[in-house]
Length: 386
Ligand SMILES: Cc1ncc(COP(=O)(O)O)c(C=O)c1O
Image 1 (cartoon, rainbow, N blue to C red):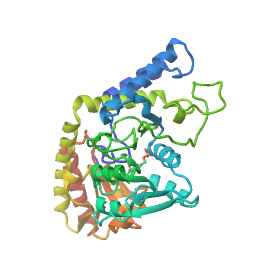
Image 2: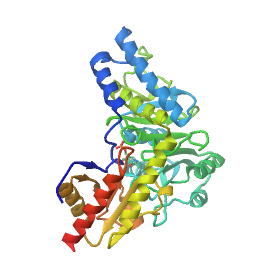
Image 3: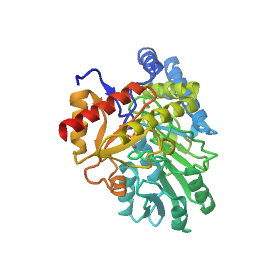
Image 4: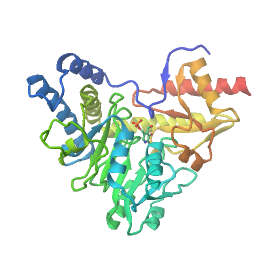
């Protein structure tokens, strides 16, 4: 088979391509606005400030957030998770998490263990499913925080956050979700789902550019800061301002990125999340069917498009996943991600540690043809490697 074109199936790492309006809005901002928001009082700075504000308002709608000041811009989900986790937890606190967490939750928690925080990682099923009953059993009166992955970046499995949110509310613990793989993929409503804090990337299914991320903090939750500095507000004070978003947004913002993120979220709102979800479920069903028909394939996770975001991990025969990924790229121009996906815990849970899996993650702009091409390419690899 001859390499035809590039097929991008790595949307869980970062989405590509972005909607056209993202490129246009960023280009316009870079060329015409360019100033620092929230700092100087001149008209260009005011315009930049307005554009950042507009993105906050757009994101507010997507997650049913009451006040846009409670949305903090970060450079990715990792920074948002660190700000939230380290802003809440102190020596002697207890936190509940799970065995499918990404390193951006796992490593900060491991670091905090060294500082006297007690962490319980609840084991998930072999499918990567976190059972709310197991969370409930682990809660004690010392539980300060419950932090869970809303959907695994390895199996795509969606966690029943509303059930876990209710448990957190009953116990008085803060409920924090890692929505890196769900924001822009499935419906999230911070009120309906009892979410106190949410962290996500802007560059994955929210369709913004790299260098963007979000932290939402419910009104009433006071985070300690881990970064202090210039905010353009209360500059006479030697202390960090208490008001959000300034308290958690020190330093110059990524205005161009934030504008691109606003355009991505605007695309989602205008297209409709249901339409986006239905399209991705449709493509995932086709992907799963195609993979299931291959000889010697092992698919990880529930294998049900309705229970996952459009992420499918698999291995074929005894071929090393890194070799499959290499051949897909080299021979066929198909981009997947192989290995541990920064989630060794999840791979230990599903039994694919240490080699990991081949991961295919679909985006709204993928086509049925992309999936046919992938399946034919895998058949070809199987033939030549058998
Ligand atoms: C579940 C999950 N959490 C957190 C992250 C970290 O996201 P970012 O790269 O935006 O920091 C990722 C990235 O793949 C992820 O999949």
